Length: 99
Image (cartoon, rainbow, N blue to C red; front, side, top):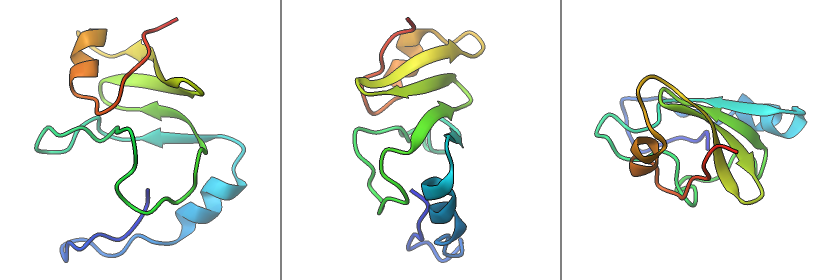
């Protein structure tokens, strides 16, 4: 989701992301795996209005690379000393192990 929040510290973010998500052949997301408070950012369902539905192909985080499949996110690569179990523990949805 790329949407405005109620936080006055940050300006609204509605805009070009919708055009990009609809027109792009491949969409990659680069993000931190968790919030500053350690809460999962990758969830079963988005909690903000969606910019585009089903358009993300891969998610690159500071912990892992995830391929988005019909069966859910699959771990493609782990970074650093992270194990699959470590990454699963801080993810808000079930991950598929590397193939």
